[in-house]
Image (cartoon, rainbow, N blue to C red; front, side, top):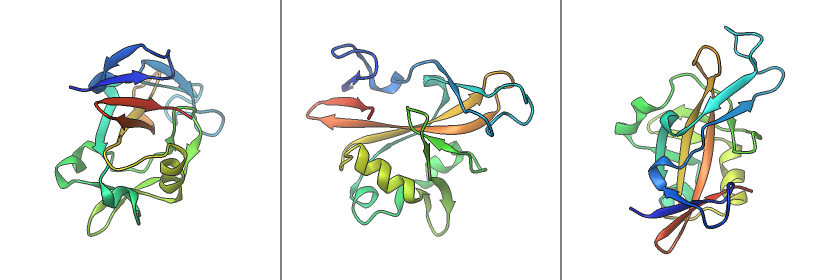
Length: 157
């Protein structure tokens, strides 16, 4: 398996690609509190909350309406639309869309792909952001991993 470097932690620190997500607490801020736990604006994420891992293909990048989600991966994706954030907790205009095919799409996808300079063969991972109190999904985090030769790098802008 390829090694990955989480560039948010330290240059040169390596971890396995499949487990590359930190157990962290994030604040969704005002207006995004959990409806069950009104006093809890915090969510948590970690490797155990990985919903989807997608190696990007040509259709995901060029003339893209979004990331195509394979039929066998559809059950991994939440049925309801939740807000999408990047690692900096910047809100991204993306949502899951079912039509003839199933996509993660929106204006935010093209901007995210451009900001992260994503290309064919790079990987994106989508993690659930769960309420710190009740564990319900309150959002999704999308992370980009840039493939460079045999290594994959966590891209955080």
